[in-house]
Image (tube, rainbow, N blue to C red; front, side):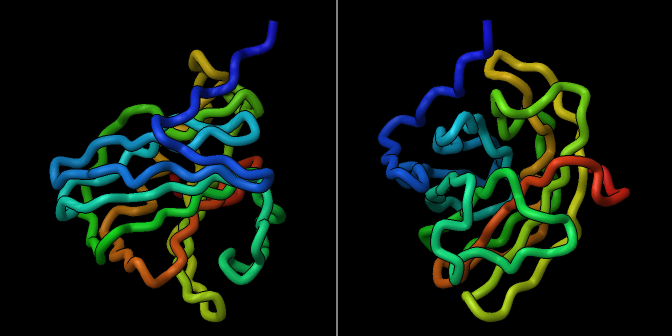
Length: 177
């Protein structure tokens, strides 16, 4: 019997192309926030300590449904999952993250490598920050990629920019998440 899909977040909204969480509060202590369940994906995004209290909205998709708000396709191929991070206010994350589980999917395979890349941009100019890889671990809802939120360590996010974490199949880099 296949694994069940990750559950929806409280108050999330879904369309044919994406799902979006209601704004969720975060604290300076670090923690995890719910990822909008979409297309067999979901789970939690661990975020680093040190961020000022604000709210984040997360948007999940399996396609770049509106090309200007997604980074250009790069050397890793086409992502298998996109997670957009929308802060309510400008926010700077600290450099320490917890070690809990993260993005989950029934489409992920336990013991297989996946690459995560974080991009920020304004629709025309994009900057990619050091991608990393992680080995998926078996969880209740398929498998989970731990440490993806480490891509936010030390980052400053603005509500006016696009902030996207992309997930790719395979080990595309040598840095571990």
